[in-house]
Image 1 (cartoon, rainbow, N blue to C red):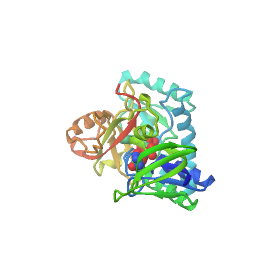
Image 2 (image 1 turned 90 degrees about the vertical axis):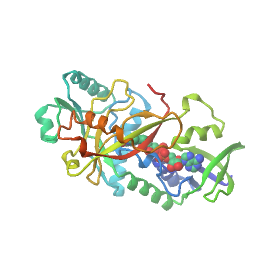
Image 3 (image 1 turned 30 degrees about the horizontal axis):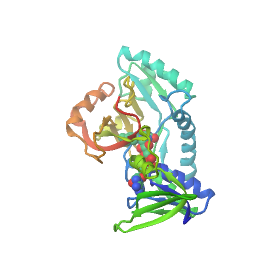
Image 4 (image 1 turned 30 degrees about the vertical axis):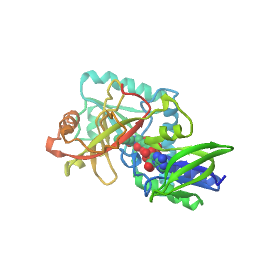
Length: 325
Ligand SMILES: Cc1cc2nc3c(=O)[nH]c(=O)nc-3n(C[C@H](O)[C@H](O)[C@H](O)COP(=O)(O)OP(=O)(O)OC[C@H]3O[C@@H](n4cnc5c(N)ncnc54)[C@H](O)[C@@H]3O)c2cc1C
């Protein structure tokens, strides 16, 4: 074998795996088709460190989220990666939403996540500019600077002696005795190949294609492209909220509602919404006509918000295995 371990994809997942494995093993390679890390989903998201509130009890997502957030905060502290453990409010704005709040609190408790129920005065003390009849406060939710996080992982990999090969796309995989042979194209479209003992698939939106190349075909693993768009809140109103604020989620849980996320630079944005794309197209355009829907949705809990306070921001695409609905 030319290499022991090869990881496909230098998004946050491939880099995190790469940093950990390269601290134990020599000969770890990461292959990335773009000229640098995090050019796809890992740079197009809300940068929220989730608490693990909504996941079904006992699920892998629940366990990994609850355990992972502590590991992530520790990692950020240890390596000076900027983060803010700002907390998150889930707000009920109509009487009908009040019982839902109680249900969310119970689900979260089953996952080991404690949430505080806040009345109007307590909400006003934290966030004087929002409207809510009642809210849940999640003290362990936060935000992280994802670029700095990925940069730190990259530095860790290189310091450990691992290697990252940018500008090279995996185009074929062949199972061979004791491992895999990879076929690749470099940035000049020249082909090359090498063999690896262990192959790790962290290719995000194309991870199902990678599985298929390796001979693993399973409809349950088919990736659906699910787009999320954002609108930013223009200054100076971006400073009127200092925590993450979410509405009570929709019943079908396809998304968790148009919410406010803040970033470490002091910005605030609304989103993401949820649109399943019909084709597997990297369509990162923001639809200006959606501004009305974003504004109407958010002004229920941001009474200060006027239509003109919003501008189109960015979009990301979630690689979902769940089908629409
Ligand atoms: C709108 C939106 C909001 C989100 N908000 C949050 C949030 O607040 N908190 C949170 O925790 N998560 C959030 N997520 C999810 C989070 O962004 C993803 O789970 C995470 O970025 C996935 O990382 P990844 O490394 O798996 O994938 P990616 O970042 O997509 O990385 C995969 C990499 O593989 C490379 N690759 C693919 N195919 C090949 C190939 N054939 N050869 C070589 N390289 C290849 C790609 O170029 C890419 O760089 C959000 C996602 C979206 C879309």
